Length: 125
Image (cartoon, rainbow, N blue to C red; front, side):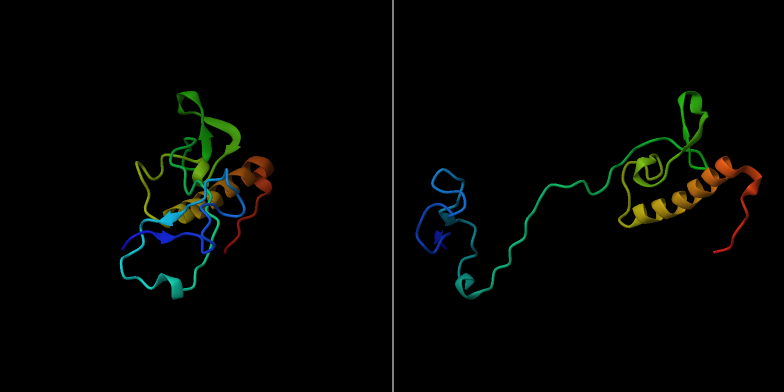
């Protein structure tokens, strides 16, 4: 254990941020006895992201968005993460893709019928 120099140069800052930056002088959480000096290191930029949003617009069985009074808003359809209420309080990993595909197809068919009426021809995938 013990502190290990964060920068081999012995400086207490990194070159990019300079003396006023927030560089580290020591790594305090190195596992005791680890041969870290001989190991390769990989760097990745980590940024905050939103992985999945729960909730969203209420839809009916045709993916039409429901307005006040639970009535469908003509011509407005939603699918995927923007449509809420499908998963409940949380979702199982991977189910978001199923949600997007199923309700995306339903919304596409309903939207085509809304736009084209009886001119829509049934297809088989």
